Image (cartoon, rainbow, N blue to C red; front, side, top):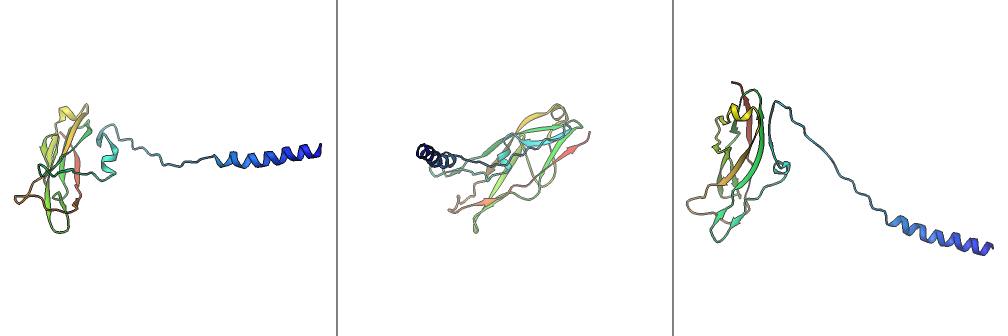
Length: 158
């Protein structure tokens, strides 16, 4: 009887570690940004501002694709203004390609422009951001280009 009980305990001891080895654990971070109800300018896809965006190059047409991304905007107190904090461009260490940035079909510059009217901003609206390369006269030069686009959005009081 002790032999049978000992074999059963020994058998359970061999099976138990195998069952524990099948356990998997995953850890991930969760976050949320909840904007105020009065004013916000947020990309529909939050990854837009968290990851590098690629302007795809077409070697057949020698063109760079335009980045297009929808934004949700709202200002219950009036219109929305936007400007660039600095001239946007991408650079490979030698060559520079300037970028054209439009928000809601308004080209942005260093001076503030109204990009969403009061009538559209009060209830909220979805608008498009577009970032396009301005092709150099002598075409694009080979290389890995990087750059940053800094936009500033302001609530414009009536």
